[in-house]
Image 1 (tube, helix red, strand yellow):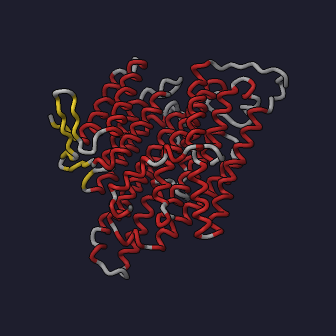
Image 2 (cartoon, one colour):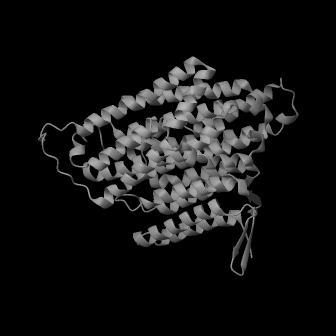
Length: 471
């Protein structure tokens, strides 16, 4: 029996998405179907033998790496399967929390389609068709981020407009780059290609000044939906970007390009950190925190010569855990305080929902890089490498990170400071074990990642073998 990797990890999820759509009214059944298939695909990708042959008793299944699809070829090599396993594993994690109140019914099928599209983008040939697949993921995400808002707000329109504008920049850059290999190094076309490509990725990754939609969409969307979308899309885009570094030598060897990427990353860290520190609304604060994470990814790419690509990949699982915990806890808090949650609204919340309050603070501190939590080992290395390149880069990066800590302190004070009409001595806990058990589990996981980074962080680095010029 012969199958193919694209058939398993691209076509099958889309079929499951259709099934989830048909069973949307039966939420428990839809949840079981989505989670079983998603985690099953993640485990299969993680443990599939490198020779791509499965033996199940008398049945032997041979799995090919390519599939012709509508005149194009999708190839998922075995080296890329750790990333595929990671994408489906994190999607399954978010699906587990999709049964929360007010999560749109469209979230389950849409999340599966987005993950399938990004998986196909990792191996489509010609590789520039990945831009079209990423645009597909953007288009199908629009309905779920407009829920429960009755009409499309300006943030969604900016999101859709900017992400769509980015696609032709990437396609034009790819067209220009086809002739760059044969040109002399002093050709102006090389610089023009790099500028167009950089603009495309800057818009995709919401780099300043193309960031305005992020806090706007964050403010109006469901926390579960937005935290998933702003994790999965940048992750797929960053891995797709490795294709360009792998294929075009002038990009890998240009010191000026990496200097610009480093400076842009530091600018994003500072801008996002300062903006987060002064926010009053929690969902907008998370949107600006995401800009800081984008900055760290760009800083890691800019430090590629010092192993930065390894650190960029190692940040993905840490980021997934922090974003998920943030989305889950804030979604639970919304059931208590309504969709618009500010620092004033949650005063004294720790006296009623101590576990939810602690979970949200821990998520924010994990994203900020608090020692003993998951992102600390990675961020301290990046800060050290940045300082070794330039003291000013390290200092400014640290300054931007401190903005996240400042907001975390403000959040902590709001949670534990009682409102004016509350008695200081009364603690009336309104939480149930099923509500806060996932928070306790995630707290333990985040601490384990921080204490034993070598045990958890190295798996995704293996995907660099799919990009031989980047090792």
